[in-house]
Length: 100
Image (cartoon, rainbow, N blue to C red; front, side):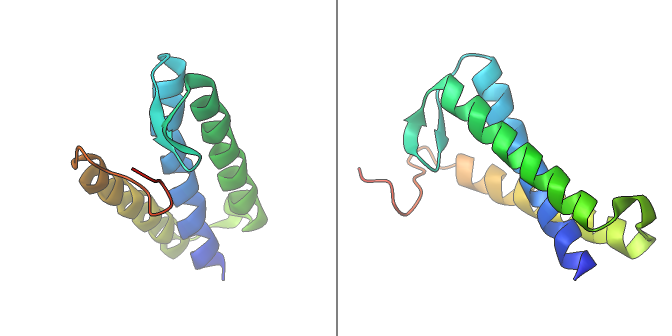
């Protein structure tokens, strides 16, 4: 269960990065709420991901993580990074619930 927690902790933490960066730069960016969410929405969504990722990581006692736990964390970060790179490469990217 700790390995799964580490994986999802990283996925949330790495997902926070584009939302925070775009929001802090004052740019619109897709979020679960809209195809073009405001900068403020993205900062708030980024912080929600950041807090959730830290809480999951702390809940998995990250001060006592082993090499395999850190490997699961790295896998989560790499997975979400690659997925987002592929997703954002599509100029017509939309989440399933976003209407055209």
